[in-house]
Image (tube, rainbow, N blue to C red; front, side):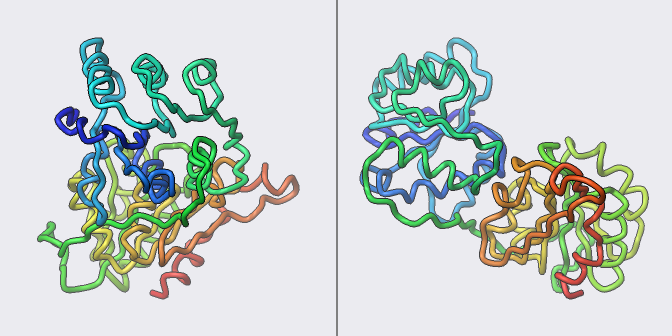
Length: 333
C-alpha cells in the first residue's frame, strides 16, 4: 500500500527515489547526509517490499512506498500529490521509466538522474552519464555523485545507515542464550554465487562447534533445496528459510555472532547491524566486484574469488576457488 497520506511532507524537500531491491536501497539511503539534502530535508520513494526496512532504521526517514507497476489511476494519484505538494527537487537513482515521465509532467524544477536510456535524456534536466558496469568505485559513491551533479554545495561525509536491532524473540528450536552463525546461501542471480557443495561443507563444519541458522526466501529455493537435503537434519542446524518477516530477519542478523552471505541484500542488512559480516564475492566481472558492491559496516570482511588458471585473471575467475577453510579461518570457530 502506498502511503499517500505522507506525501504532504515532501513539499519543499528533495525527493529521493530508489525502486529496487533491498541491497541497492541500503547502499543508497546514506546519500541523504549530503549537504544539498540536509538543507531542506529528504523524502523517499521506495518499493513496497522495503517497507519493513524503512521502519527499522535507527535514524527515521520520511517516505512513501511505491508500486513498481502502477495503473493509470495510481499514476495520476502520484501526479496530483506532486502538484499539490511539490518537492524542491527529485533524484532518481533507479526506477521504472514512468517515474521520470511523472516528474517531468508534474514540473518538478530539478530532476536528477543517470542518463542512459532514451527517456532519461528527455525527462532529466540534470543528467549524469555513469558507466557503473565498469565497477570503478563503490555503488554508494555512484549514488553520491548524482547529488554532486545537481547541487553545487559543499559535501558532507557518507556514513552507512543503521537499524534498530531488538532482542531476539523465540524462534523454533534455536537456543537464544547460545551463540549462532547465520548462513544465507541464496541470492537474486545478479552475480556469481558460491557452489552449493561449499555451503554444505561450511554449514556442517560450523554445526560441530556452534548453532547454524540458514535463511532464505521463496525465490532462493532452486538453489537452497540441494543444500537442505544435506544439512537440515544435522544437529545444531536450524532451517529458517521462508519463516521470517523482514523485522525478524534484521533482529536475527543483529543478534548473531557472525553472518556469511554472497553479494545480496541480506549481506548488506547484516553489515549495517554491526555484526561480523563475511561477504563472498566474484571477480568475474567488474560490475559484480566487491569494489562496487561490498557491504558498508563496522565489522565487515570481504573474501573474493582467486583468479582462474591459464587465462585472463578477470575472465577466468571462479567462485569455486573460495575454499570453506578461508571462511572458517575468518570466523575463528
